[in-house]
Image (cartoon, rainbow, N blue to C red; front, side, top):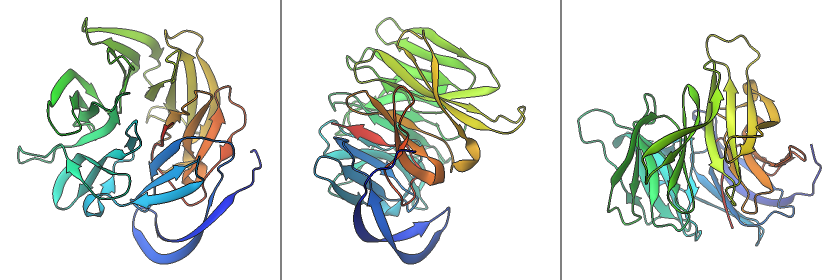
Length: 310
């Protein structure tokens, strides 16, 4: 592990595991290093933390109604002004899609369970110009179709009707959707031609997810999880990187599944040289795209996918 100098900010945090616990003062340490841009992630207190690497500052915001946040992702808008997330409380059944200001408040709700059953909507992400948010219906357990919606809540449109469990990624030109299936592999969907192309096959006893384009879209990173019920332990996650056409696939890091709360998630740095991950002991780490310099950047317990913009 790379040793680095930490900049320390002391704030009062409420610690959670899966349940709330007593208030406790915690020394929060952020390793700003030479990183740039802005990063957001939900932590194990059901809040959203925002790190500004350029100003070396940290802030936190609270989701509407103190909702529990879906650990698949929070997503920063390209201008850094708003956050999209999926949250659930006793007041609205099922995970629902929201946005809020990065300053806190100004909530907008985009989905609602209307059939009388608990309906889940998860894994929101912004497109590259901030004109759309993509999300998955019924993505909590059984998988469902992908929708897009404008930030003002209009033009809610079904994009594809595949049964997807985890987030998708959208190309900068808005023409290609990167997706994975619980079994089968990583695919790219051409929205103009409505065609699906397999980029890489995955053994059905493994699970590939969290597929993300690099900023220049020449590479794709994703997570390969070992640990289905028909496999023997030890279980593990692998971080994979391949060319955008599915060639030259490489493993850059293998990690023990027992060190994680839920799943391991990844995202690219804005310059495409690093990945951020929610790593062991539920903190955020960075790693170079070649698998070197695994570096811890937080120390206060986080469990969800980081979002990282310029």
